[in-house]
Image (tube, one colour):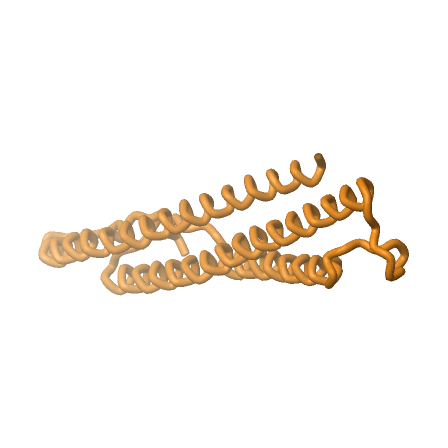
Length: 178
């Protein structure tokens, strides 16, 4: 592909899947760590911890469980966004391949996101053909521009989602360290 399109749908999907699996494991671990009674008992005994230390431990435990759940949600959100982008990227790549094939069939070529006339010798008899190809070139160029613009917007949306998740995860990490 000679069009100016970067990215690998398979890698995006794999990274997204890895984040979603991590999210699921974290959510499961948080669910296992939360006692069903919501109270802390020393060493598994039936006696509840009370007093200042017991309340402080329980408060910290709840804060860690909340942080784990929030982290899990952000990881899932980021993974989902990567998987969605993977589909968008694959679709854009296929559209550009189709446009590249149409360009080649018409004696044009797609280079770095631009539709250009093929190199070669043209004579006086080729003037009508060249005019037709120039018209087709403009049509194909507008389609290539549309695909690249749409993908650019999708990438910006992905970057915004990932940046938002990064900031939320940083906030959770800072809260856990306090």
